Image 1 (tube, rainbow, N blue to C red):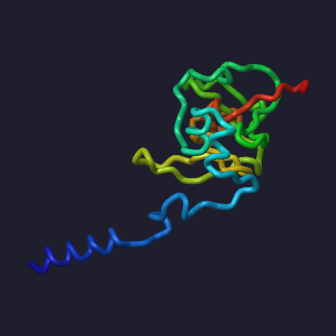
Image 2 (cartoon, helix red, strand yellow):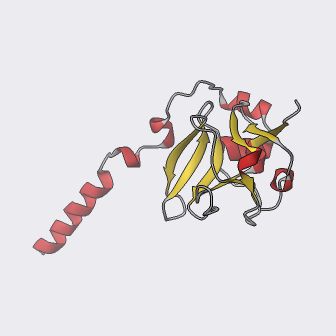
Image 3 (cartoon, rainbow, N blue to C red):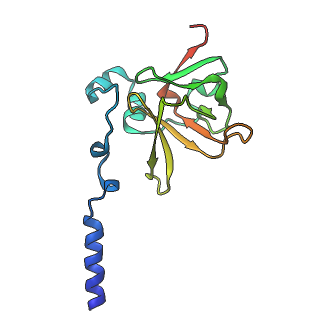
Length: 162
């Protein structure tokens, strides 16, 4: 009986714990340079872009025209226009999403994502907090070894000549 009581008490303590890891996303929100209300984001973005950038959804694989884009230029956040990736660092990963071996330093923020039951590194625009995608350690070995797997709808492409 003592063992059962101890287990119940321990379980209660663990469940009621108020650690930072258990706080909601809103409570952990970092202030970004560009902030807007939900209504402002919804008015600016397409429904899919809003879902990806603001609610951390994932677009369907092979659905973005940017996946096969080979032009020279820069990829910017579709939410605020911050340059996040260069075309020279893009590669075909075969995954169905635009992939890059590195980000533009300082323009992409990283956090931990455990939504699928395992830990992934999530990428956000450092200016507006928009969800871009995830970074994995299975990229090109001859460069960084990283694969920044990015939702095409979270990006806009600016050709080099513009």
